[in-house]
Length: 226
Image 1 (cartoon, helix red, strand yellow):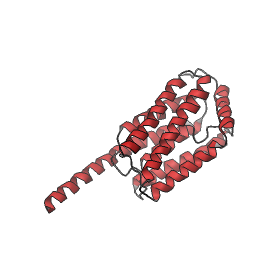
Image 2 (cartoon, rainbow, N blue to C red):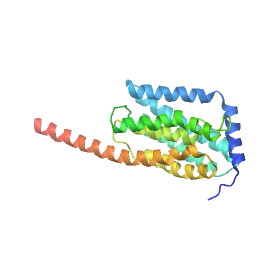
Image 3 (cartoon, one colour):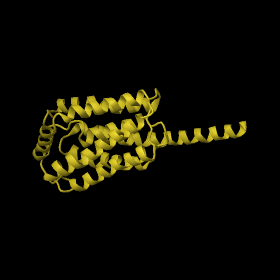
Image 4 (cartoon, one colour):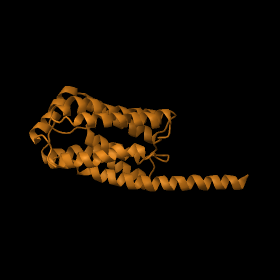
């Protein structure tokens, strides 16, 4: 389906956004580095800090990018923005109030795959975009929906607890919708979006099953030892 705007209009939105919010792009990278650090060096407050940061990212994208900037050329962006805000609130609900979202990097298939996806979002995504010809400020920087959604997928693979599938619905839907829209406009670096989404969905389902089995086994062993 052809978007209701041209590639020139789309890139102009990036330019307007990037120039207006600078130096927030640097702050976003610092926040991402902080999230990674606290996923490796755990503390009592690390999970809440990570979830508050993810919530901030998604609410920011919903309000600032979608509703304020993208809606100028596409009114559907108001709907996108509302959905992104809901995702941000979900991170607050599950991660801060319910405390069921916990993150810890481990050197296993989930940790390594998550690290690769995070590295793509933060490093390879902008490099690939530059090679293609998307040069700042007319480029999708970190803090915008597609690279930030990829980053979110990578971090969710570092989940230390059974992950509520509700938290994956909106990022996964965006990985499909955002990819087809952006790819049709030549934003080929967004090819990583559906790959990260599909990989994360499959691996989270497997990981959840393993965590459930492990919890049941521990329960049985404790019952035997009584």
